[in-house]
Length: 569
Image 1 (cartoon, helix red, strand yellow):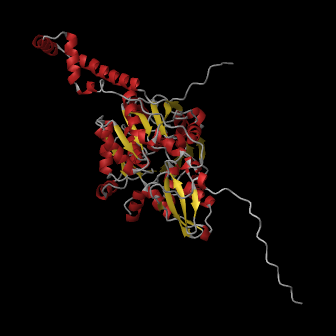
Image 2 (cartoon, one colour):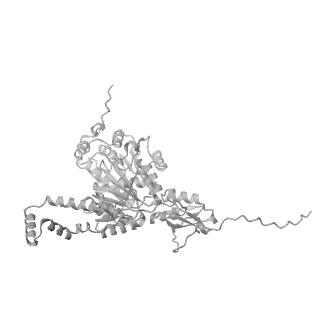
Image 3 (cartoon, helix red, strand yellow):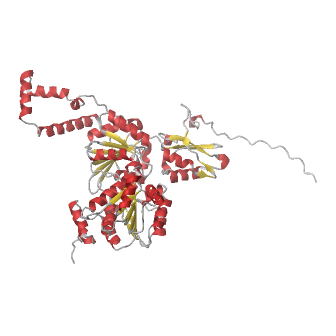
């Protein structure tokens, strides 16, 4: 009996046609990932598929290769439809399909997404494209106009189905399932498996084969080093500057909670001399594509983004992901850090956490199955060493490009200045802008204050919101908390003090963006819409008295009752 472990499967063992195998070899693909090894044969066999896999595990190739294997290039009609939650992911999938189909002469793919002109899309669909990759909203627009045909549809793929359901596209997905022919093969991929995804699979798929990747063995986060820096809110920018000076960053993706914060932080980084830009939903699609293109070409080093804008972003240069603001939930954290360390590359994910947020780290560690290692803020000496190392690297690179002309210039300067070589080098450093930082004083950042275990501490750093409804209509804290967890995607530990009044309620929450506030305002409890809005207190005031000022509890004698009148017979 041999003790030799079975050989890992190769792409040639999965049943893919020769043109696709040749394309994979030219792209440098060697062995299939676990999701690819299981999903490709299942789809090639014609079965419906329900796949549970995290981002970055190679699931795009897992469905794209079988789809391409079943495409009849001679038939100029849409034969496959891939739905994605965002424009960025749609473009990424379309580009991947084009790369894999490089040896399929005449193949065409079209990405449909909001923010782009309809006319070119109409023309492309009229000419005939083999695969359409679309966001649900734009696909629904084309379905209403009758510009997309489903008669020859052989494949329907939902990528990141859980995200599409969270974004409110359940009805749109049902409409698509009802429109495709009954013979259409269906594949659904999701990072999580909530009840909504199960419902879609049960309602629209035929005995789907289920593939579930266990994070302990197949996690795409194994190549990512996770760190946490404990830093106060008002020192985050300085801490980030230190990070950029001591970490070997090639390109960094920075996540913040709101669109406004992305613009403000990008502007402040640019003011400090860094090449940075914002990426958020307020930018036009053209501007968003320009930001991503500049990042890919090395014209940008830092992109400050919101969660939705960066979903599906895949850029080789991203070596670091910084969670400048804590994400709303663990799923968002996994998607965020999955922007680095992709396809076998290594990456670093750093999290800024205030003292009160430290208690949430165990939820993130549970979601990733990995320890998030605490790191000390870089000292002044570490910053100086980092600056010196970067300058030395630039000088070594410059030395490779020096020649007789530069050497003659040095000799001329030595003669004209009557300096020796050391004096000349020191003088040149004194006028070199990048060397001036080496002599600037660097102060140590103050450590974040220790967490105080008091009842008021949980509201530190939170925003006070006013909610319509109070004791008069029977609003209670539990249904309010349940609504916030469900519709604002908050963890229960993130919700601070709740103060009930007669007609309204005050609640402390992490800062909420405009879209979340608008969504919450329509939620009803006991027939009353929440109508949530920010509710700042006047300076120095609070909605509850400090503990020390509350009157002590006393035991008062009961008030004597008046004698009852005699009962009449």
